[in-house]
Length: 360
Image 1 (cartoon, rainbow, N blue to C red):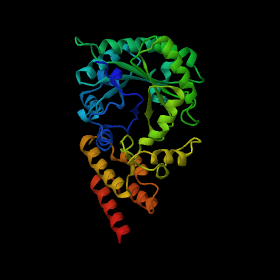
Image 2: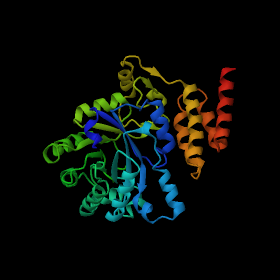
Image 3: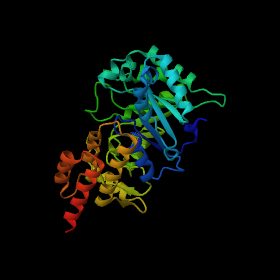
Image 4: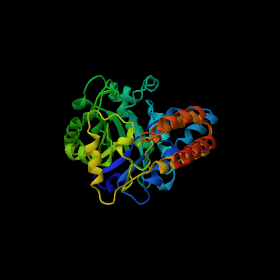
């Protein structure tokens, strides 16, 4: 079943971010953004190496499979894969079908050099013929007697320069179920503002070449209100949220918000005060307290250790920097967490000490 056709419009999506949107953090997002039963948010896994799923040792494959852990509360959920080898992509797509995912997405936008050396991620923009073979392979793997699951693609505007007029039509002719556009080139990385006006052109190309493909804009989405403004301007079907999720599993909650003034996010010229005013205009909006943020941070720490015991616990420290920001004493608390927060129980002790101190 193609769940993309059942989504409410406009919808939002959780970006696939390595060592961020892992099983632990996704579970918290689903819990604190009240996912179950919703049809306006789509979850993505971290990207997973299809080559590794085929060739890894049993121990290595076990670790990769942990990136594909999910719960029904996270649905609809899409497994993101990368490979430049069609046979490996077909195998991995079939595996994700068997695991019960709602869809498969192919990463054609990651700028990481180690990924590009494999001919994957953004490097696929330079090899459109290979990209089309990989999409076709994923579709073969995703088929079943009942129809299978849909295949989508995530990419950028181009490699060294804007290639919307050539690269995007190539992908659209493959009729992906959805196409996510990070509104920057690979050369841009995230150093310049996302060019959402170019997504409007992608929508025009979609209308002409593949009308059933959903277009998702990605880049610099700071809040639900900000996403609504960007989508209204470009006409895309949905918006994907990345860095604004750090320390903010409440991002998609119908009424709860973490004030943007408390988040350490680059705005690229966006006026945060205007966005906050827009959020405040929502009926019944409530802001998440500092105490709740710290409590959930501790919960996040325990869940990470439980679900991903083979991963370095230091991975959690990037989350601590986001949870612990924008309130009195935050700098000192962050410093203690960076130094002492090497296990969930130690994180809990540091947080409890901090709360006790500020309450005295």
